Image 1: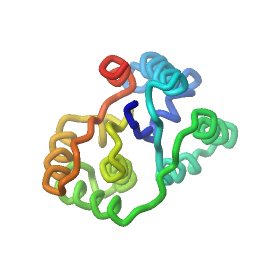
Image 2: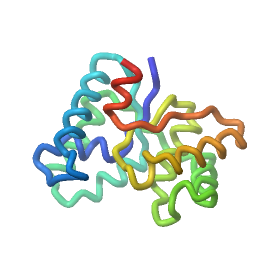
Image 3: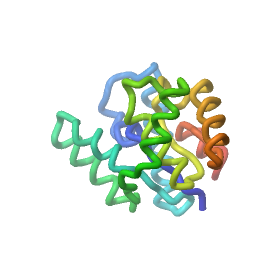
Length: 164
């Protein structure tokens, strides 16, 4: 069973049916995210996230939305990874290598946590800093230099197409 890291955007998009358009594809991303969580529930994936996602979710202004997103972690049996020196070191390598901007340290932490903990892939809808060709290429090079396995970085629809 593939081990997958659930990045912050998935928790937001699970409830995107009540949100505003995102790149004009909110409905598609919402549906793919819901289908992905269903696949998690049905045992196709072993879900992980991290304390860094929880930090981001806690910043949500709407208390009801925040509670609902936090409850997804419990409801879907998502394992929460704790801070780790290697994760922080690798994240800074991603930043210094140009994969992720320095202003987006938590995004680098998400990717690094996936690599350090030997997960198979990170699932995200953050196209600006995580799910993009440039970041993927740089991350793969850095992981190889560090003796880490390659990780896939995919959006929920791609995960469902490739892994189920």
